[in-house]
Image (cartoon, rainbow over all chains, first blue to last red):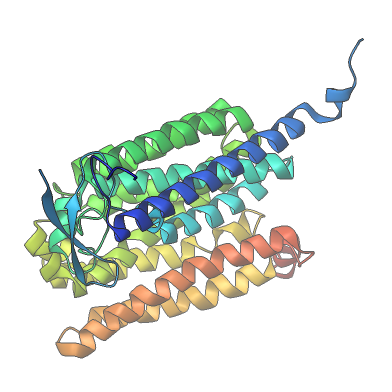
Length: 53
Length: 326
């Protein structure tokens, strides 16, 4: 038999708000990752693939 | 132990929720609201015009990233402003439902949110554009939060005149992001927003003066009276309208800009005269709100036409000046 959870129990509205924050934060982080990637390419330019071996 | 706190939802209804230490009561939209998205959209728009004014142009990816940094910096200063002014916001009808006075976001959360975004946006702009633009953005945030919100707003009736500089800097920051410097052209765009700010806000303050008085904010109608405010609105508009035509004579506003700036400047003056003359009853409030509403459209149109002329092959300033024999 599962033990009842200890600690703070969030109500439905608190769970919804936390989900909303988590989702937004995830999207922002993913967007930032993509942004750093394309900015790096733009800053380095075509020189990024011209390197001495 | 469970503490119950009242929070006001965005629709104005109230809800009781058990306060959980360390857990935010806000959702993503509350944090978005802290960034003052409407102000942010105006900042993006004016900064873009400043950026496109740059003679050398800018890599589109770096330009987009720079605009994003400037927008986030503006949003961060909005969040810090809401953190500092939560007591004022709570007693004003226009702002009482903002996330902090409504209890959906704790003051400490807004402060942390604003500080993190401020530092992040400045560093990011420094990396993608240059450190002069980043320093300018940092100064703009400082000016809005410390000089305007913390110092001027509760101290002097000239609060929005001097503080208006913070809202006027974005075209210069945009230009600085593209060039690493500022120019007289970007300074004219600064002047345009700077001169536009007092008649815009004082028109609203005339209607909302009871709110400002209750909140203890020394807006001009509260301190100097409505009569002095109406005169100041008219004087600033009389300076603003001709100033707005300057881009034509400086070579970066074309024929469309000339027509739009003259026609809309004329409407601004007409509405400001209306505010000056109509002083009693509901009609006076309508006149003030008409000027307030049109002033938003006015600034939007001026920058939209400048943007269109920078992007599309429209007749430039050279054509206008030749036709005018200058």
